[in-house]
Length: 606
Image (cartoon, rainbow, N blue to C red; front, side):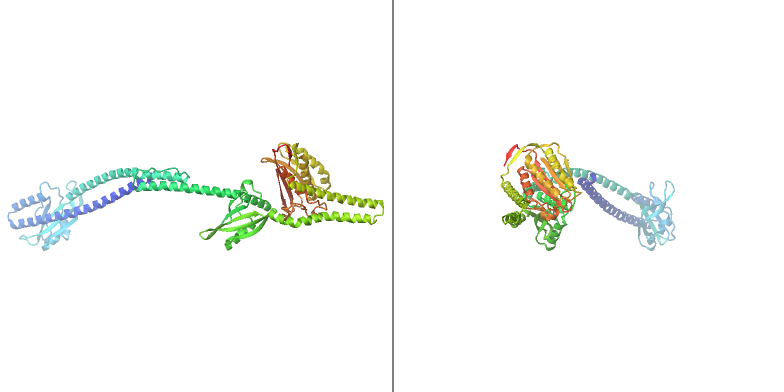
């Protein structure tokens, strides 16, 4: 809008200033001109009236007096009347032959108090409006006159001589002066407009360039430079803008680099980092922290799409820690558990002008350390427990045979069968321990070949169908992959699926269901074994893949294994360069997820 441009505002300001100055000058000039004219004409009328009074007093010849009076009024363009003490006109008014001055009735003149002073021997002067009759149309109207009255010394005492004239000369002069001022105003406006456009090229054009450059700076483009053409304040301002743009560009580049470095550090950190504001809402997270929050939300039963996995609100446990940090303004160290993983949380306050503006929390997964501590404590006890039972049974039944407690051949055969079964159990335990040790040492051998995964899964399902039906469990296969042939070790993968489905059957009550689901995900395929069983407690969830881990025997209907199966499963999957994970909720069920890469080299891998 032109109304918002500085040139228009400057032009309007100068026009207003010129108008105010000319108005004040006009009023002052008019008032001075009016005062000067009134003073000058009043003195002239006074002098003429006095002279006329002297002429009338000095000459007895009436005709001679009238002639002199006409000469005087002709020079000064006035009217002259003589008024008797009774307020009547003495003779005819004296006026020049071509006079255009209207006639004022004597009654009008005598109403004026100033003009009456001459009857008392004083000089009366007045400037007032009197009622006159227009000589052209004969209508009465008011008109301004300048009148002077002087005492007249005649045989008839207390007479007065009044001379008056119109202010047409003053009005004509005022009108001419007004036109001159109007012409001056027009010239001033033209010069002001020219000056405004001159300023537009000298001031507003650089300002427009600065505005355009500032818009570029606001968009993040600091390459725009303002050309410096002058060495005045505008040039200094343009130079300052260019310097500011350079400094801002350097600052933005430095901040971007620092941000990239911080982002890189956060992404490369193994620990989870969460930054929250003063209201406890999450503002910055790194990938490990996103994974922790995702697991937390799954545990709380919140199912959001992937693009909303970073929740703005802290979990309740973290919120409690944050409140302690804000309240005490001190670092707080605590442990939290998420899906069986134990995290050590260190949360410290962030300050802004000595006020807490938020907090930063570092979450370190301490599950492995706690697991190792638990393994160090439980390994010997577990091994001793697993070996002690068969050894005691072997020793007891062997003593029974040696001592001759078993009399008949059937009893001896029964005791020998028990000894044989326990020896097989010990052998199986030792072999699994040896296999597990070789796997963990990296000596596992896999026969990778192109095989049909769908046929293998169907084979495993058919193998367990009878057991599942006997226990009232629904066992089903859900194949969602695009094809069935992949590279894997058939025997080892059958061992994995057998172990997982057997565990699912042992932990699923009658009426439950088990689903073997396969689908494509990313650069590989994912196999999920889901059950609706009793689930795994959060305290035990992190240790299911450890040696000798066993569920509560009360939940397995007395069919507890050696506790090494899941450890072997994990090592087989890792030998395929895959990953295995578990999700579980107590009382709702468990899901084991296996992710295998599609492209593997055929052959044997150790």
